[in-house]
Image (cartoon, rainbow, N blue to C red; front, side):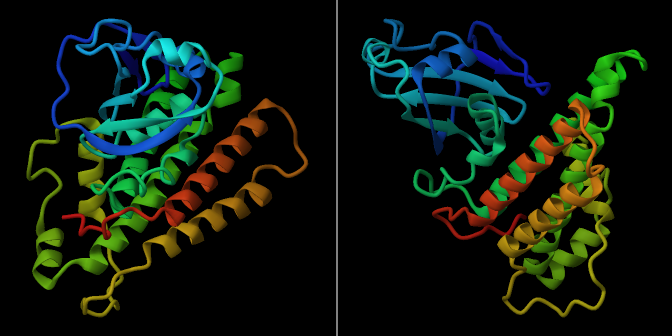
Length: 292
């Protein structure tokens, strides 16, 4: 199996624990050669599977376990290794999807568009939650790596500001998600939300604790009327944030400057804008959930 770490390094390791409760969550298009280069040889399809048919990778991500599967046998795929074909992504939640998309295609912008056609378990809200967690975990890992570099090293000088941008992206999208969830909550649910301390339950993972702290500190608009069945336009808010980020990229990242640092910042912003736009355009099969 392959393990995608939060620093985006991928490690091959034996799969010793079974995967339970996985359902179809999406799909991606990629060639067999490209996936083998990223994830190593498939776990099944070379005679190890009971029927010898399916080609399948088991992949652990910071968002949970996933499987990447095509029902063709390896022998068939090896005859056309460079042809882009559709692969099914199976997971228990949407949280592995940004990691699989980033590792397989080089960008998170592809994962929202492939969901609606293939799953009835996702919503615009759950996809946005998955992206928020990805941004936070990726930013934490990137920041930890930067902090281990010497302050005068090339790695530090070229990258030291990038984790801050990732954390900023995560907080901005999480605020949109909170606005959306607040707009759907009843009076009692809003009261429970406000009165629930950040440490009422065990913190769990780092991202769980961060998400709980952010939810507890959320300050809604005091002038917002009580809920009457309407909800905040999540897609519209994501598009507005994408437009703001595009403007910031064009006007705040040292216009006219050059160099690898600026190039990496531009690439980071471009990917974020594309992902926000894809999230806004995604049309999952089920209505947006309540987030509670």
